[in-house]
Image 1 (cartoon, rainbow, N blue to C red):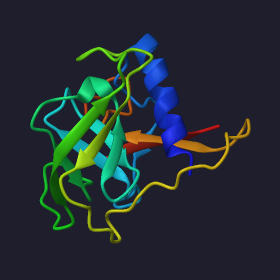
Image 2: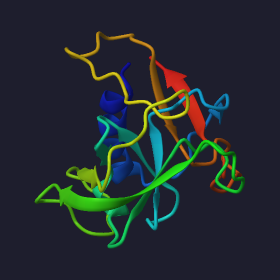
Image 3: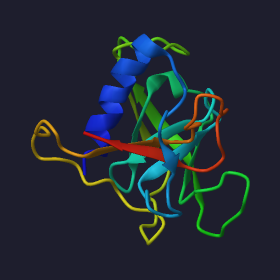
Image 4: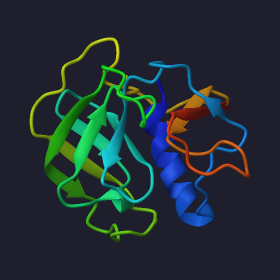
Length: 162
């Protein structure tokens, strides 16, 4: 699964494009992205990826004190009974990141105050052991609009490319 790789590439490109849409994307099938987390409060609809039971990787521009990490979410407006909400215990931002701004160092690690309970709705992302080969199909996902005219969404959206 190349989510982390794509997430990092997306962050680098977002610093240049500053677009909040996954244009040409679609609403992801419910519970199909179990490693996706929602960061609240954050700037806009901030997402990250669960990389272990206690750590999340996300964009540093989403940093906020008293952050809560929402796991097992699909629709942010509905209590689906699958959610886990865990406080952030520690946040490690890239030393060259700039709060509230997109840049090439826009990455942070968030340590959860307790381990996530892994189940069908909450799972860690499969981290690659090598770089993706050109043409590899990758997924980018998050809480964002997927049409030019659309505002941010409450449901996870995504797009495959490669």
